[in-house]
Length: 188
Image 1 (tube, rainbow, N blue to C red):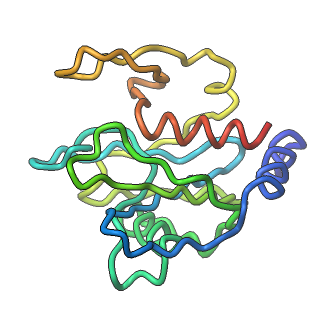
Image 2 (spheres, rainbow, N blue to C red; image 1 turned 180 degrees about the vertical axis):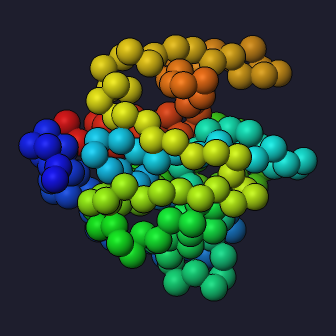
């Protein structure tokens, strides 16, 4: 059973977020989708496996990845990627809505746009990381929102300091940090 605060946060998200499927436009820009799976005021995150040539190798992220032509839309991409990366079946979760698409600060010469889809799970899914994910964990949203996890991250090779959260030896920064801040703002 959800606490009143958690239920209120989810209901606020339901009223503020559009439940729109997002078709990738044919404009040459690469598209991706992520799943923000929320359970009991925590969100599911993963640490990506280290892989040569992967610009997000070893980063903390939401489950997600690139749009494939077999995907009906970006919503289907988010569901497929959660299943492939963490063996999470989002059919048992409720689709709450869609956050605005964002682009990573460093997305390469072709660029990429990432659309976050928010899901609420009544029961806590037990992630089983695939080869794409080193580990998975649940970030307490209330703790992140409180400022207790606030820190800074020095982006390698650019001497650029970025805001981050430090949680259980994980540094949550960049696009994932931005998406989760959008999620928290929408839930207020």
